[in-house]
Length: 299
Length: 299
Image (cartoon, rainbow over all chains, first blue to last red; front, side, top):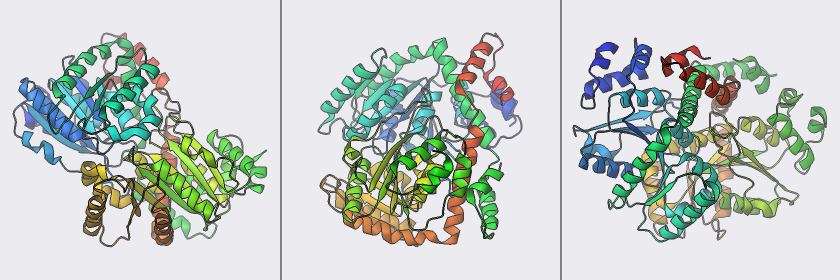
């Protein structure tokens, strides 16, 4: 299956073409750049970023959103982007167990991407793979990743709408990062909202939004993914915010962010940590070894 | 104060020389590279990474550790590394309120570093600044940062010992990332251990350590930072693990990680997102605009 065949067969229910295309892009096989340049543009698909700290219930919420979309007879692709280790350069997670019930559903496509040593938190080809899957014409492409910090910011750079999942306990650090969260979130899901303190937390969040992001239309939706509560309201809030993000100005910012990341990955590509380690081990034999002198000499 | 003066005056209680040196490195002012190459080596100082997800209580725990070190008449420097936004490229946090009681203590130096647009989660000069502060001869340098994922992995690359702070609620995601956490943590602090489920969570964590990191000496310490419980035990566990990390093999891996990050930052340095955005805005005027063709043409 060459890149032309992949392109010709691209459709939400053609899992073989999608899987083959992702592999082509991942491994930079012949034709991958041509495939990317030839992708049809598609304004229908909503690219949704779901992120938040560990323990917030992102997988459960994604699972609940899949159920909601399936109920509405929409097609959905989910890319689970998992952090990996710079030491072993291997994947950290396999597929998420909770979502496995959807693997054979005709309207659902799920794929895990490990980061494999990218300098940033996302898989080095996440942007390209998301664009490719989007071009297949799904109603919604969900990109789900753990992490608060850089990974989250990267996701905001490639999604039309970003949902940040928080739990009532997140208090302290959310307080500290709230202005950053306001920048990336169009929707906050206050998950595990059956827990004590959920209303108080949501109210504080609302006050912060009013204070720090007065002009921005940020929704706060209380959910309980496990109990399937608030999911339809969450989906409605997400859809409503899709419109805001087609403005030309936002689009160029989003593309600049994507370009920045793609170029960054390209620049980092041949920096091999194992080779560096060997060079350092040799240099350390020298009694006059000086780390900063060595680094200055390396490219 | 030139770099030679900074070097000559370098001592834990000379906050002026330390602050000046950090600025010199941050802003790549004249002599910063020479200063780094001239830093005295120092095997006494323990560089401690403290990381974990939002809401785990890292700041409180750092605060409690400072109190413990001060009680033991040790000197400590704390670098608070805060994520910032690639959109605004500004700092997200100011100084942490909780630690402010220590600002004028002669044995304590505290500094916040914002990331300012690094591709990775840490401030682009975190490694160099940590090495510089270490050379001042503090008994302990604590690098504290929020985030699970890349930032955490970066911290593990520059610390002698990394403590991952978790709370009993972290269940799901910890389950998913546990093999990754085992790689970076020498010590787990199960904080807020007065909460229900703390013992169960600690036992599960212990079982995971035994299963996934059988040969590794990983401590699990229950703490309650707010109530100042378990802090002395945590410090003891950290000190005990310092020894394991002076082995030559670990040292070259650590230096390779540091070199990889420094070179990465250098390669990314002149990639300006605002310039990219302007180029994209011009290119978008063209009806034949193709994002991937444009990106392929950019350096």
